[in-house]
Image 1 (cartoon, helix red, strand yellow):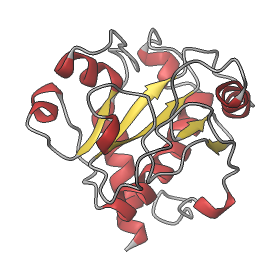
Image 2: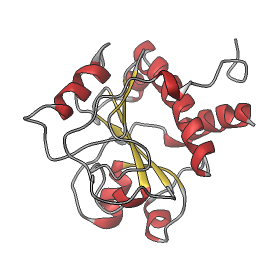
Image 3: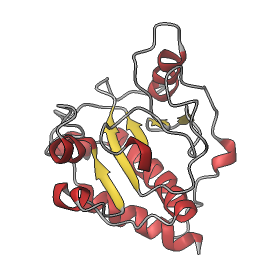
Length: 192
């Protein structure tokens, strides 16, 4: 089955585990300009989306949050898309954060292993639906693009470099954002 014949992910089927910390007081936002790609800095294994979401919902949750967590076979939502999660200082108010099992230190080969390939495919399907819903272009946004408020898909590393509000460098130098964005675009075209 090629990418265009695979069904795009049904967001109504995604379990919701509410994060403990996010901006609960603001009004629902009406515009989202970016998707920010993150790595969880955890092993890339099954049930990682579930365990990460449970941790971020707990009494001992870090003072951070994200909208979705993904591993190779599951997605868990933790913050509604129209609410501000605390995942990428500098663009939180205008972005949706997607956390992925794995590490920023992963090599090119590790990003191409069967687990990562399945996870990135699942993520691309989710991102396509998000892009369609919010009118987000499926183009990569680099540091200079972020500084001029370009819309699209970016990484936590680029946000850190653009706004100097964190030192996170995920998903690392070996992650191929352009290839990921092409996969998102293929699924986005299938939605139309």
